[in-house]
Image 1: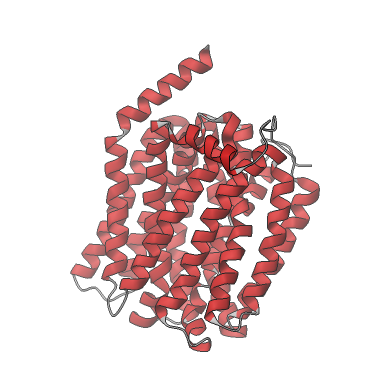
Image 2: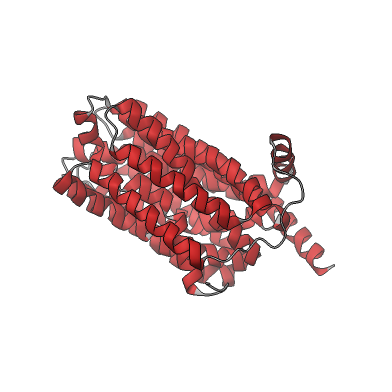
Length: 406
């Protein structure tokens, strides 16, 4: 059994949070081929991403309260079984409609990883210590978007798009085989109230009434929206407009993702010295700079894929600093409702990302402008939100410190 505070437990939690990026990023290089083989339009294929995001959001709403009542581990194992079954259905899909539905169900199972990993962190840590733990998890988890598109590009080139989903089935089975004997149950006390729609709404109302929580939620959601604008549009932009092969696309996408890994590693060092707020500010500034850099590159007429990938790497570095700290700040006030707080954050974050990605997919044509504009808007919105809510979040932090002292 893995012990709290060990890197092995952190690595396992990071692997659970990586289910989402793996399930999305690994098949990005296959999107044009899926469109051709299933006779689907670009917009229809984009729906396989949006359906996943919506399913991911809905699943989190359910898993949070369920895990507060029944424990983290049994809920996680059940969800992993659903994920494996749905991933197999994706691999065997014979139409774009079947693939869209299977992706939504796959997300319902896969969403358990991130919401329960965050809840486990809150079970064990709080404040800056939780932010550091989430940053370390993010640094480990960041290997997924670095390696997944390269692996997906290789699988696409060698075996076709269905092999990607067969690989995800195998990954889910390995995850369940590790969780069963090694993951400890961390829930300190099970919620007394049975899970029902009414009890779930009551939990979410308590969480949503906290102004500081809403501020951190906004920071997490805007930053995540820019990420999924990139995920939704980059495959078509870099392959169809910039002429990259599936493997070259995988490498380019991985280069951008290295930025996220660097941001999380830097945040893990900075947050214990500078605190959550200053780390958030540095990250938000980087996101705004990266988004505006993409706009400038297009305005200057630059035609190299690097002119989009490098500014996005800066944006993702900022996201790697913002996301763990925003999650830690949002969940700190709710030790008794960690699952619900994590679930509501994930639901709104994923829903915003799905909408942003769908809009970018709908607007994409013969230009990268919809992609660049969306990333720039989300980055600048994050920076403005950080500036405008500093006083509110500072007051909330002082109040929580006073309560802890009592």
